[in-house]
Length: 258
Ligand code: ADP
Ligand code: MG
Image 1 (tube, rainbow, N blue to C red):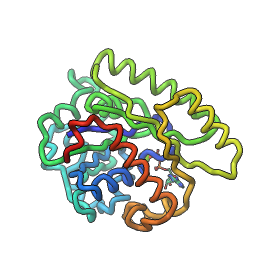
Image 2: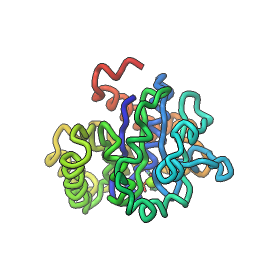
Image 3: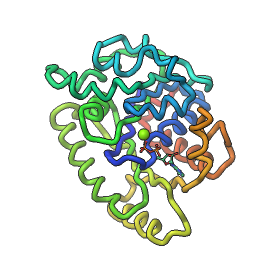
Image 4: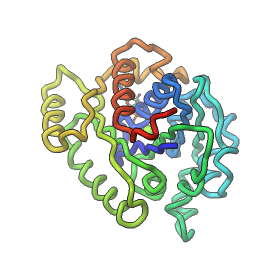
């Protein structure tokens, strides 16, 4: 199984939207896909239609009480896509784990030897705290959604510093599979300028596919559905299909045999 953390310490940049829709696109392509909701806000769980009552075991139980991952996995309405949901309890995990010796490797321990899925996406919270560190320690690679706005690059350098520290201390083989530009607005000159700057700075690391600002992407979660199911032909859905295709092209060859 290949594990991809979707992280950016800024909130509202499209992490959860990207996690839900890329995971859905991968499942539709025949990859047995697991989505781990690691944000106490539980937006990925809600967006996938997992009701609060169905979250009996969650990522909190896996992280704090070391409940086996397989016990916390629930199915979704999408064939081939399962999820480990999150509850608000998870907001306490950072504090509860603070004195635990291997506090940054709880998630990688839980994922160790996991069978039954080909690919796993971890939807991270908007911080560089213990939860995100667990995701970066557990992941093979990182996908960074970057909103096309003025301070985008500034936040990114802080994230890249964290990645370097994780590589040195916790997970030497952590890679960065790519940066995805989100909420792109063609009519806004600043967005255009930011996209150009980011490409100039990061080169091929930036996915060619750009996710447009599209109201259908923001409507879908309130129906408990990925946009790809809610409206599969809207510009946002089509962009996420393109991004998934590009992602598959960047994955190590031996992992592609799903
Ligand atoms: P994060 O997980 O980084 O906090 P979200 O994916 O939850 O970000 O996105 C923040 C808000 O913006 C949500 O309400 C979401 O529905 C909306 N959104 C995300 N991407 C787009 C987009 N490309 N176009 C329009 N709205 C978007
Ligand atoms: Mg989110």
